[in-house]
Image (cartoon, rainbow, N blue to C red; front, top):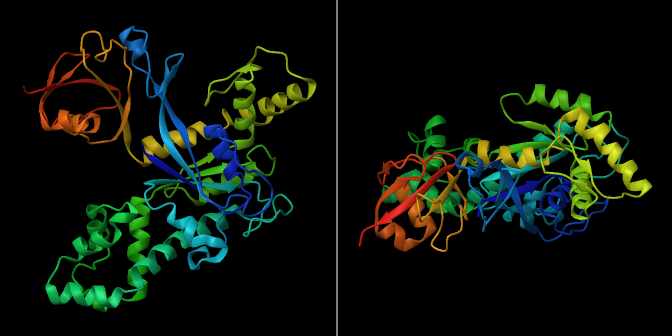
Length: 400
């Protein structure tokens, strides 16, 4: 399951975002280090299901479908709040950063209202510049990667030179456990002109530039500009978008509003679909619940179009991690599995995944015996090298 890391300093609403996206109960309190061990839960990305295109009633097994919207699972990791010099271990920072090793994409939950200082302590709204938090997190991750690589760099560099090994391959061996690909490592080295230099001659600044470029390409970040319902946040969000244009997607977010809506929906008070701009009252809310729902409607949904939580997850997975959703089926005419369930499974796979690679993901034996695929919609035969498209419905045919 694809992992998405939630990062940021304490008291930005990160754990609230996690709770809203997963409906997992976590400790939520306005002080640093409420989260000590990382919380792990299942969230969902949302996209148009093919059920309506095919005019069938689907029977999801590993996901769910509501009103023609399919929700596919992802794993969310809520890492405890980072403080300055977390990469050195301050505030148990090393343990927290280690939790992000395998997450290919990160969500940085920023307090867009500026009501928490760099340490996560409450201050007057507007007193702190949220742009500082963006740059602070970049440095923490970059320095964490730098120190992991630098601690025995001299020995590593000498070994590469003495044995005549390929530097990108050797660095891949060292960094693959962090989720980095060899191609990303090679591209970063070439962009900086380091492939032509002996590793032993690389300066600390060159090593830092390398890990920074590698992080930018391999650990993309989307900014969840949280607490967007607080009035002063609007100006900060505009400024963040201007200052970070071309670097980050900045999405106005109210995790607290999303959590309230999802809980109200779970209680049967409202009908609400994550990511929507409206909700419908279907139960009998108390006066305080009605007041809260009115606040969310006026200060979040009408103002920003949604709470932003679902949009953040979708951007992280589909736009930054470059994933697509595909439906493997056994019967290409009825779109069913071997038990007759219609469109039971949906797989999130990287863009560029081939039909044969999908077969391996479904089951290793399918991959080993792969003969060809069939596009269940067009009935066209698909070669092993056919690159899947978003929302493809595919039957895997094996050799006997």
